[in-house]
Length: 302
Image (cartoon, rainbow, N blue to C red; front, side, top):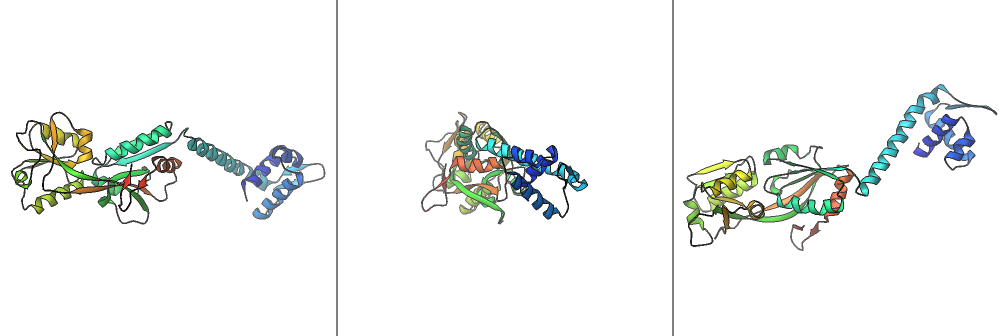
């Protein structure tokens, strides 16, 4: 059974005329008759009673008609929606991101919305813990998150978008003649950090820094959002370690960034999605952002 057969059936049922159905579908009358016979063989019933003068629907034909019309209407609607979406005239994209990967979705969305300005975009910030539980949620098309947060799943595909080194932010009033702090300075500092629940990978990297240099801070205050971290640092309540691209996004006159000195650390970020995602806007997004691989590195330029 195909949609042409169903369209012919509907035309004959509406007009009770094989010749008129042939005219409306730009087919020969013999072709329409063949399509109807093929449908009757497939269903195992007669759909029309035929005489030399008249054509009438059987009870089985009357039963099939509304379903056939619904199938054709749905197909027409789907064709229209996909065609409209492909030209950038409609649709909706749903993105989830963790708070430390904000710079990447901003750049990719700029590319996408420039090409498809009429596709609506919803954005939701998820904590690290939420990202893990929501990764298979069909409510979202894409996830921006640290690579180490990805589960080992055959249902998830991803592209590494970038690596981000970690930097240190301090209050602009911090008295220092140097433009960097080393491990000795950090041992004496108070810290204002994104909480482990909000960003598990960043928190783990910072704890690794502490372990590497064999110290445990005397004072650590945790926050569940980046702005609170910057406010705390700007108020002189402590220093913080954050991804450098995130620092560039949120940096204010109240804080300044300095080098971590003899400390090296970075985080890889990914754009992840479910392999069975059927949203046409999602396919347009991947095509529009045109992620290209950097030679000999698992990193993609944006």
